[in-house]
Length: 410
Ligand code: SF4
Image 1 (spheres, helix red, strand yellow):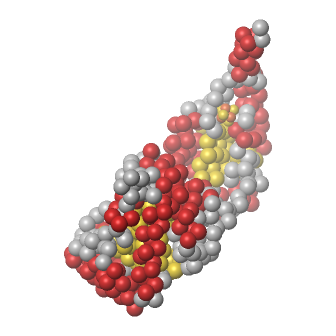
Image 2 (cartoon, rainbow, N blue to C red):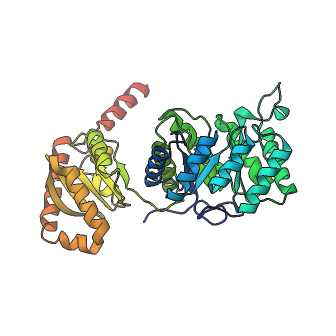
Image 3 (cartoon, rainbow, N blue to C red):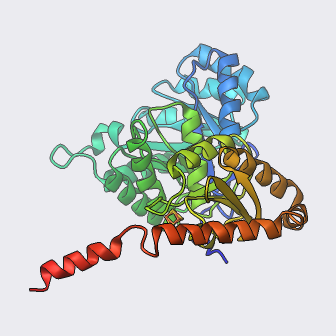
């Protein structure tokens, strides 16, 4: 039995970004952003396809000049996912992006501040039924909201979003999602918490300028996951200084880890290794990760360093392999199914995973019919041998505990 209860989500209203629902009871979506020149529509489309394959549901492209808007006109009809145009200081680029047929705009209230221009964009978006993300950014907050003595505050970020919403309201436009990103995790967490109290528009989560992985991934995860676990957030973006494919993968993996999206790719678990290990667990786990990475096999797969505790500790996994005496013990749902040579462990694991995914558990057990008994016996032999050679306390923990006791008892 696996504990798999999703976090209850705060209710938001729903908008459509192209054919992707955001908010309400829609699954939390993953976004990323292209780093190509949007005017180079072929290169940008290639990147959009790579992002979609990595798990992005929605992709944003910059629309910073007329050539970029022309690129969008060529990209949108061929894109596999809805396209959001990122608008900077020039409101004409927002209108041009709408002409290009984009599915959503992103406006930064700190960049376009003239109410007449903001309302014009909202009116044009309303006429086309195209939503807008109000993308407040702690680093480019409207100067009238910036407090010289305390700097950027969560209250100021929320106020910036609410002012923009009020302009939209004046022209009857409400197809809106909102973000209040900052590079400081505590600041963005508090800003989103306050925003979620102030409005029921769907929220786009992110830690801006998180930096390169792994530190950037950890920073973004700290902010995004904290809020998702509180039920806040309808769509997410990792802003990493890396290939955007890494952003899409990270977003997807986070949602899968939290149980907010169906698993699409493998969930590889591996033991941390210890004195009982019969293989280099780190190497085999990394090799397995590489072998499974680009395949859509939504199974939990375990790599365990020994057969003494491995199969038991990983009995909830769909399948796994535990190292024995120069061989690997394959198990499916905790049942030993085959013994394979050590240098074939990863290949065999992948082969059985593909079979299990495509044919199901019953067919896999039938496949193991002739090897199952021998596999169980071999596993028992290797288990007994490991215990015999390394004893019950392979990590010598009890000896250390005795030593500590003898030194601290007087
Ligand atoms: S006891 Fe076996 S499965 Fe557990 S950490 Fe050690 S090597 Fe891995």
